[in-house]
Amino acid sequence: MRTVVAPVEGEYVRVESRSEPGIEVNGIPATLECVRKADVRVDLVDPDAVCTDDGRAFVVEHVLGPLRLCGVTAASVTGIASEWDFSRPEHRFCYATALGPDAVVSHPAGLPNPALAKAVREVGTEPIDGETRATLSESVTRETDVGSITVSPAETGSGVSLDLEYAGARFGADVPHDGARGDVIEAITTATTPYLAPDAEVAVTHAAADVLSDVVVLGGLEDVRIEASLGGAYHAETIGVARRAREQGAVTGLERPAADR
Image (cartoon, rainbow, N blue to C red; front, top):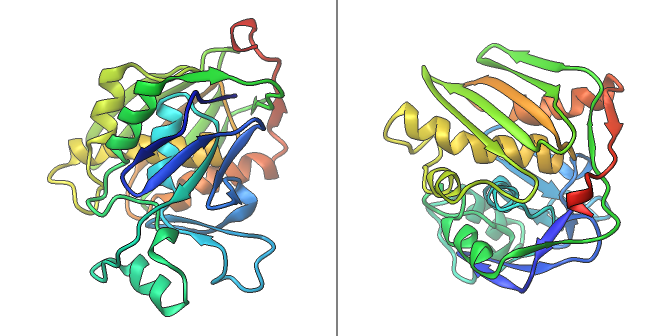
């Protein structure tokens, strides 16, 4: 696991270092167990909340994706938005349920927070002890009416390899444990969500952040190859394949490479 060397702020969020493995968003663990909504966006809900409208974090993929792109897999994320934007359905939901605008941790333009990625790269990251990582013992596939995704085990220490397709456009990238190249990070974090993207090339580039968020961070996986043909509300596929891996008993522990210790 890696964390930030010093606290940083991006647009709408603050990220601080964490000495324990994993990421928390507004105090909620970024794990599959806490995923409450996974279709056009991914929300987390505190498992100890009195009801599902308490302790909720909205659109977490737009902060988890850029963090993993920068190599961060241990951090405490806090929403810092203080003004309402009622053109956004998430803000209307929060207002109606007595949550503040800080429960929404995503960029209003549908970007995977390029300012956060830039800030993390400027302060740097460092490895922490007590790392818990997992990969797969076999390939896992999930198919829907609008797409499919396959996650396969890769060589120990190789990180994540992406081969994605969306509406005929393709995007591929390698994301090592300590983060992707700067040009890859910039390309992905400045690409707009498919629902606002001007073309399929931008949409599939943006999807890389979502896949990293859902399969790698929330799914708790590393050293995997991810091949996907995405469409529609594809978080059902990305979260779904991570859940299926557990259901199939395909998740297995990993020894940390010496470089990560």
